[in-house]
Length: 425
Ligand SMILES: *Cc1c(COP(=O)(O)O)cnc(C)c1O
Image 1: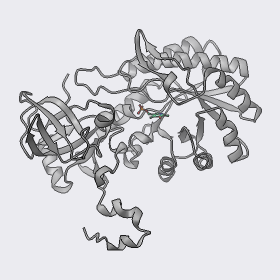
Image 2: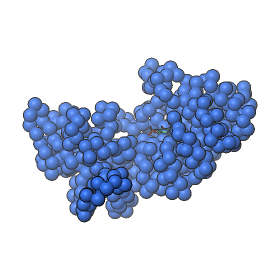
Image 3: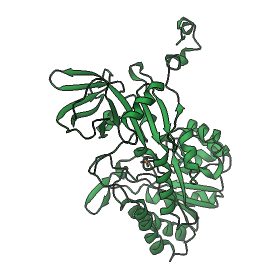
Image 4: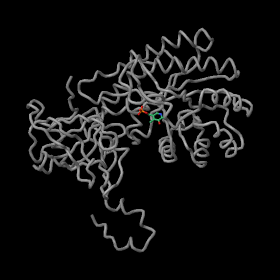
């Protein structure tokens, strides 16, 4: 399978006249079709709701598209809560799934009426101290420990993850919450990240559903929802098969009917907090080749850097690259594709076979729609790029302007030295 960009060379040449590279661009049509498929996949569950993981792509224009499909927001910080509030997403439309949470963030989440998903048993009293009285509905995040396996392969390592309550703590926590007057309950778990298999959610669901049945039986808690969180992945590699969300929804339905329905819990709502699955494939980082360097290796230097996309530097993550206009040429040149940071891990690709790249060529870096722009930072004083939306009607809309030096220096504005800067750009 080959990865085909959702923009052509001609389109990018036109866009770059107004919005110089590098930029992130998102595909409205792709986002909509995918969100509609997800909704359909879980339509069998009456209370189903996706809370988009805001951290993946915290852009109100994009989140607004998802709202057309009934999505709420999964927030984990003060500013994510503020963004949701500003968009009019409040109350039960916010899931606050945070960890190591500062007191003011809990207070703010409670003020918005968000559903609070506790990461730890000690947070019960911490939250009670802040609020005086706990909300009527509370959720707890579960971490069974050990490794999460599908067949014989290890998917992830919850035993090594900082998140969640142990099994024992789930029971103890539910009893404590009930004693403190909490009426309705939810459970949450995120046990494996970027899974490219249709089996993850059904397996996770089975574990969660069985836990929910035991919790309800042994503590008498009224469990209203089970939050399967994020973790459904996307195929970053061109030869990976993508997840079939309809099959995943069907797999969850099957275990729902096997485990929850016979236990009299057929009215429990399924929640998800997908980030990557909702956005990653529908974003490109578009950059231009500005230097070629022939030393111990062949290098292509582009005008984007790890500030625009950190995943390769941070995780050694693979992001496919298409050289626009050269889609049909043989990949007979081996390159390291780099950015300009004074960091040798600032490489979008290492030893990648690509068509011969000429200066001025536009490169599309694929699957940057989630955990892409959002992870950006300002190392080397590099500025964050613009974000653009390719609308369904073919128009391009600026949905976040590029940073300017003035933005970079803004946190000096309370000092006299700030007056020396001249921002007449
Ligand atoms: C990051 C995160 C998500 C989203 O994860 P994806 O892998 O992007 O789907 C959901 N919930 C929580 C609590 C998270 O931290």
